[in-house]
Length: 438
Image (cartoon, rainbow, N blue to C red; front, side, top):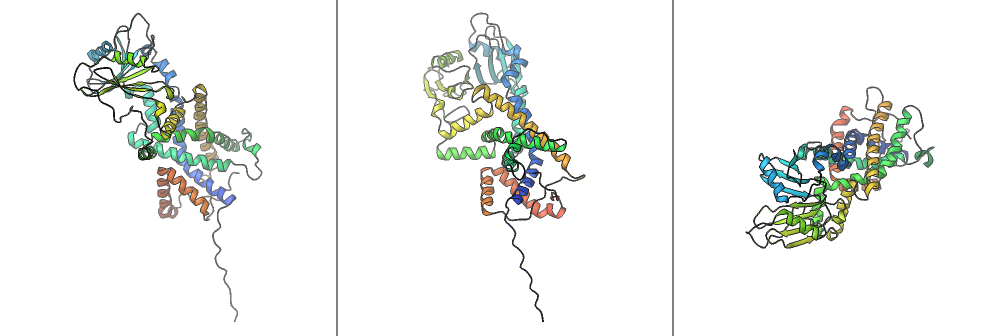
């Protein structure tokens, strides 16, 4: 009697070379389904917001600029004019540009408790214009960029898109990296192939540049977010790396008395000038009898953003805070925000961020068109990926990225769970037998 031997099932191969490429391509594609619409929106809105001063100079020229006609009136009289005309439930901030040809900006809550901006001619106390803060064009652009006008709910979607965009940049570099018959010269050359291949090459070329220019902007924007930014704030708190700035709160020293005559705002501004603060000067008045004036240089240069706490009765400086006093993490976050806003190193920063916005738009558009042209009729055209095991090194890299980008990590776990429980049974997102576009 003969014995038939059955070969043991072959172990799943570890992903290497072409197999890794195919898996990366599939996840890059699936992430793009979510990220690219947001990248399109954020590139346009972010590109517009970069030019906030220039745009406002055009659309608000009649309220920002005044003719110097003598000696400016005390700021107290300018505030009184706003109160008389619009009511004043709460005085939030006064910004003195220290420029003879610019208006005074007063932020306040009006009689209906609407947070508003008033621009006042400092020579006549004429209220040039009043607009609710959230109705100003650039504030709407800012809110759209940060939360899609959806408040705390909308900002989670933006944060998720930003975190997945970082993953897309990493996987995109892997896909762009020269391999096979495609050498480095081909990888860095301008798109030149005809037809749909031109869109794929455009996507690869812009992706290469975007990985360099957009990735730092994505990372520098994360401290503003709820999940990642909130976690960073907790880390800073636990490690003594919190900002020393009192702009958004913190323990402010009180005035030495709890009653008396409050010194006028113009005296506080004069004190700030005498202390060498750089224009424009922001003054937040005290809200309680024992509170102090908070004063800041609103210079776009971070190192110039000195703050003062001033006794509201005596005019004594209770505390002076220099930007240089911030711990290293706080400084890094602040400089990152400055980089994100195109302010860190002047005009070159602005131009590089503008290029990044153009690249983000082009990357999203070319990615969509390249997909649309290559997908099979009536299908998503999800790239096929091998059924193989990840090596431990890749597993550690993925786990590390999930920890560093927690919202992305949580969504990945949910996506994998849904894929296992539902999508595979329904046949969704099943990779077609399409060769990678090397």
